[in-house]
Image (cartoon, rainbow over all chains, first blue to last red; front, top):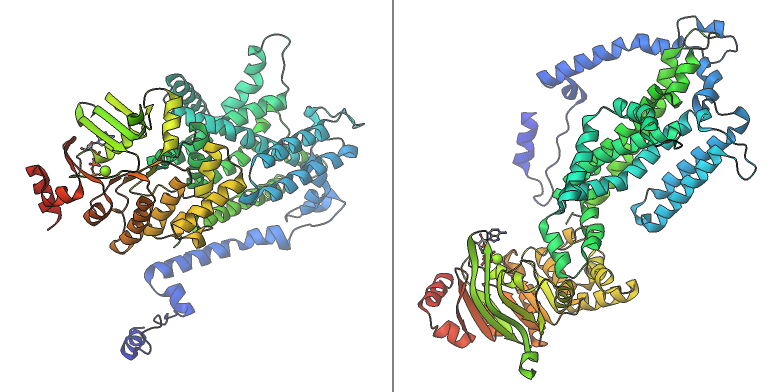
Length: 365
Length: 248
Ligand SMILES: Nc1ncnc2c1ncn2[C@@H]1O[C@H](COP(=O)(O)OP(=O)(O)OP(=O)(O)O)[C@@H](O)[C@H]1O
Ligand SMILES: [Mg+2]
């Protein structure tokens, strides 16, 4: 090592070139110092301990079978997932109509892919999303255009998970912006209302909020009024998302220097336009990582709706696993559902990283 | 009446406090159309506060300010009208970092003048050419040097077609080699007859461009004279003292 360095310094071949990087050998990389050596050994041990898991998941696993009894061998029963795939994905939605939730998921995917580039963000995209959501709800509910009506109590599985996550974040976001702006406003009433809402919602666990929404809300509403269970659940998730997003956005607002507002004032830009076009975009850019975090947490939080009886993907997989025909393959069900959650959340975090790198690229000389 | 018209800015008996601390004391200052005023004075003397009162980035408590005959009071209409007349350039540029240079110049026109995007961008390019950086139009402010950023800030202010320009130490956040390019831009603007109030310690600029140099200390205007008198035979001992301090 040291002789190599000496040579490099001593020779000084061409001062206009950066010094050649000395590359470490593989062994040096793994065992070069005490910390690396310890880590290498620890990781090795961990990998070894994974062997039984690998055996269970891959080598001893049953991939296809029509006979549930074949699954009691000790390996993973992926055949069960294959058999129950439609149920886990679509829940109790009438099988003949399952093309509708499938189409809904297609629309969600298409809309998300179409909204990724910030260049397309704008009022028109928001109208398109509103329209898409209406179309999706009509598709799910039916009752018009010759579509058979399907009550929300039959909706289930992945489309419910996706719709709840999307709508609670989508509706919660503008709400959060108002809460964040309200909390920083000079109007005492607006400030008080925002603080009260945010602190109240943040002080409650989501489970509690879901119970309040699904059990107390119907009792509180005047007679003759009712919101269906899915709507109440969505309301609870939305306000929960709004409170957390609001605090993240408030942090971003605080990070926008006062000179920005002064410049906008000096240019005669009306106050609310300055907020919308100058302050908010900068505030949001500053908080992409915590916004991503909140979005991911909210996607996973939708799984809590099962405790108030909404039939999301996790509920569907649990119900599927209780089928007496099969040897209770709960682990397989959970692993499968976890995989779907992972794909979604990984996608979100990857996208956020890309967004952030775009923002950073602008501040390079 | 005619006399009033020729006045761009009339400041009378202006007082301002931050809490119990009086920043501005009985300021009287008239600026006629096309006049170039340079304001100097030690740090904390209230120079920034004074020019920020003109477009109400700061509110004054006593006295009166008129801009092109419009009274600066609590009327939102008057304030809007005054901000139309007055452009401002800040020490730290205050460009919008999330917008390209061109958008920085175009968006304010769209937001406060309801201009069409194409017109706004055309005017933006016109003024970017004038400050000699049209080739940077599609970059973001963070990708420019300080001098370039300040020139964009000047172009952005000019896009609102102000009749009066306020400069608050436009070169003091710049590396020395960039000071000149910004000052040159300001000299060109002055030669076109723009009414200007410039807070600066660039005494070369003051000598060359100013019609009057104002010296402030402790919230007061100590002296206001033509540059010739100001630099060579100032009335006040305090001015002399200040000048000897900054001109080694
Ligand atoms: N928002 C504020 N609240 C309280 N005091 C303030 C505020 N802004 C400025 N001051 C004080 O008012 C005085 C005048 O400030 P001002 O910025 O006008 O000075 P300046 O002459 O522009 O100084 P500099 O050359 O450092 O820019 C200073 O003593 C400053 O500390
Ligand atoms: Mg100042």
